Picture 1 (cartoon, rainbow, N blue to C red):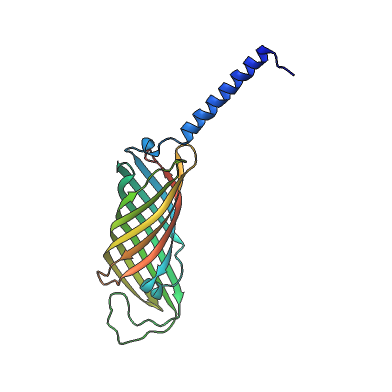
Picture 2 (cartoon, one colour):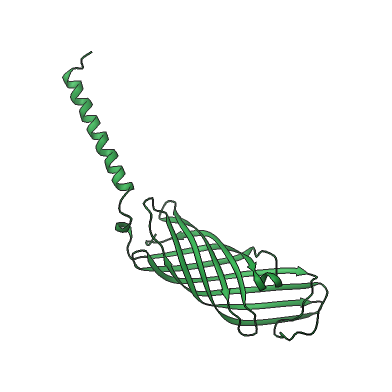
Length: 221
């Protein structure tokens, strides 16, 4: 069957419009990621929990479920940002294990038995450097390095006696993560940071893996 000429013209017109719309959508979805990158600001409010490693695990083996973090950053060039990372992480354990030293007194030669409350409070104060490229679908994976220090409060309570040592420890914290855009200019951030707090001020070398989940926002995203 032969289609009438007016119907052929209408069919060709609709096909042209549809092809143009699809091409426009594809050009938007697959735009050059670097063309979308530029100077800007981002922030994140995060829930954090920590997994103790090494000597930290030897003192407190339990996972730290109490932690919060705030991150602020500014892009200095395409895909490179500099910012600050602040937080508060609480490790706690009640145990009857043996302790051979107490906070503020690292001299060996004794052993204490009995019910004990042990805790660490860590307050990271880090300058955060990140490489954070933008993928074609807007997802932004990143790798980074935090440099700075930790305010650390170590506590041991045995019966009616308690010992506390507070110190500032220099530290580094490599990290990996991803920022996933949602809507309204907001995004969800997942990240993992390996915290290394070097011995200082009467507190031994401490280390733990911090895992974070939270809300991010800003023009740099």
